[in-house]
Length: 259
Ligand SMILES: C[S@@+](CC[C@H](N)C(=O)[O-])C[C@H]1O[C@@H](n2cnc3c(N)ncnc32)[C@H](O)[C@@H]1O
Picture 1 (tube, rainbow, N blue to C red):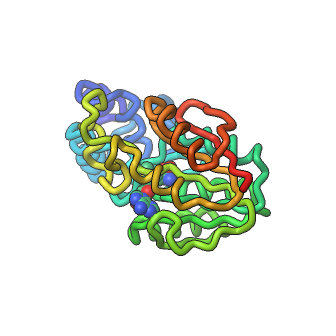
Picture 2: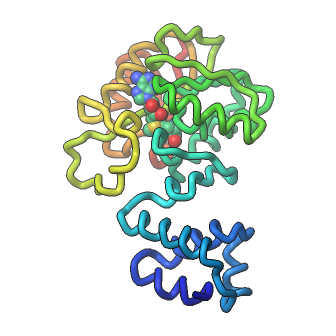
């Protein structure tokens, strides 16, 4: 079967773009332009079989990032396994705001693949960065990502900030689980491959965010990701815990605490 025949057949079952990405990956080509330039190339049997296996996984609904084993975040490729959340494009707003804040120290709570903490370690090499997660397997993926991307930062296993010594005036970042299992407007089918520990929280999805706010009693800046439908409740909760609201940007809320 040729490259173009494989794409024509596969696009009946999955997005054409996904089919092209699978083929590019299996052929170890640099990018999809290879497929256009070589559309009548015959696929070796072993490559066709590998592509077909990935196609079947995609047809069952497995996210492409888990099939390929990586996902791009802020222009870099992060290893992802089913133990970590797939980094989302909306989380990249955190990077922009954090860079503009020019922090000396950063704590990333619920680091998952490490996409936030590692990106910031590379973008802000002078900042002292600690990545925290409650999951050993997530921390191990994050450590692999730090190694392969050459980022220098600290890792810590902890339940939120329990027992974590906070540096002076840190920037605390948290993209914690915020999905409520009862939300029926959300397509949970697309989330079924991702770890429950990374997605769901009690109390309308706010339990972990509220608990984190409760834990912070030092001057700091705080960047949180949450669904926009939760922003008003979080703003009110943070206000009653001594935080001033600075700004909201898409999924992100930015606060400051002066004492
Ligand atoms: C929504 S994922 C975010 C992952 C990554 N920061 C990102 O933006 O892609 C949430 C992460 O929080 C971690 N987590 C869940 N409960 C936690 C807790 N009590 N303390 C620390 N981390 C927690 C999960 O293991 C998961 O890696």
